[in-house]
Image: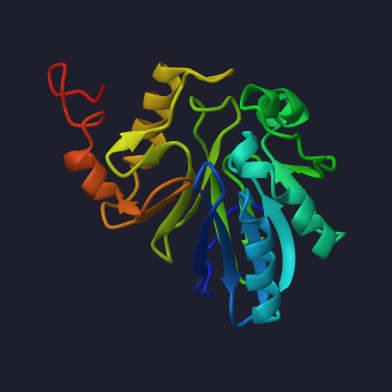
Length: 227
């Protein structure tokens, strides 16, 4: 990781939805540099591989917003196609990653055989994507080590399961914490520009401003403070 800086590159992002959890995985790329990263390869892992290959890009990293089963189950497909690509995750979600077998058992699903994590995501640093970058913001609550990945110059953030169109991430899974999630949304999502696109782990995209004004979990209450 490196520290944030001004980026002249324009990043593109493409999402794919797949699997019983209808999870959204993403390819973020710098088309001029021919470099990409994959974010949250769930059941759509093979589709993300095809997108990278069809574009002729070099894949530099698999970046995980968090380590719930539906966001990591496609990692083996990505690693089969790109054997040396590093897997990056916040340290606080390593226990979830290592317990993927237990997660799968909760849903009666087979457990994927995941390779070891190669590197840590540190809040305040960035993930380089060619000449562009994704700023790492720490957003625990849905999962202990959840992060979001923000490109303000390109007007989007990949937000995992923190906030959705009209809803927020669930907090009833192991490691969930409703109050931490709401604090994360206040401090790390609602401080972003209103026009910024939010690309969530499930469902359609939305914007910061739309959720600020219309999300029933986030509208001002309790003497004008967010919940």
